[in-house]
Image 1: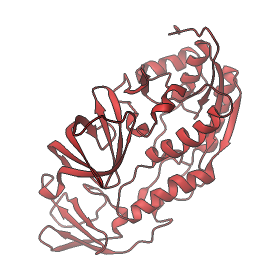
Image 2 (image 1 turned 90 degrees about the vertical axis):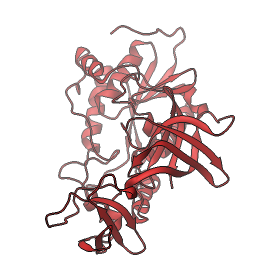
Image 3 (image 1 turned 60 degrees about the horizontal axis):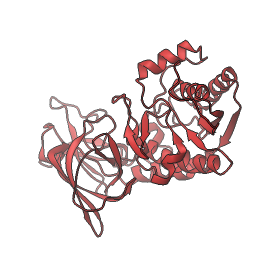
Length: 357
């Protein structure tokens, strides 16, 4: 590996080592650049309830993290944040679904656990930086999208604060995933061939309905078409999201059907066969609060945004009101669900984001 820079004065950094190759390569790069590197593994979840078989990953992840730390000859600290993860992430997850919204637990995990609990502990115990394997960049104290646009993860870390950026490193943010894999093999990392982790942040692969049923009781209700005809039943509006077309269990010759509306109070799902139905088109939405990495000097703001990870950026105007923000898209958007995050961009820069009402 060719080093991008060699430090004149050694700085101390803790790398959040997850067991995957992204954080492992991040640690290796930082070592080569002259940092004093230590690693930290977070234990956030240990329950297997509601998961796909053999998919609760923390023991395997920690084992892999230990192997990586040993191969790089760096110490590994284990941080037990399971109680805080339960309170800050999982309670939010279940509460939002119960209210009929569509939350993003990965966003909340980064906000409350990785870049709050872990960040504070790291910076307050003498480290100069915390580093992660996120595909993102920090340039001129601004949050910038990754060189690998497909892997870019700024969507999940839009809650970062301006003052935090000077203490955060994203060592692989200017690399493509293919290059990261090549580097992992070149330096013989023990997890170089490990598959990409999937599923819920720190939990693993889940069957959403099964996972939610741990806390939310099924409550059968009717599925109706846009004319009000009953065409099926569901097990509770909490188990479905706007625009969903799989797992509705509607028989007959019609379809496929899309969920066009959720009425939580009446426990009713309205479906349509038309993906261009007006019920599924959104030209205007409301956002309650926005975390601005750089606070705007004036409104309205003309920028771009996305409300799903890897969605193409959409042109929009953002207006500020006393109760929040109104966002108007240049083109109608498909199935925007309350609870999703809208993340804003100006060119490559991530401006911040907020939760859709």
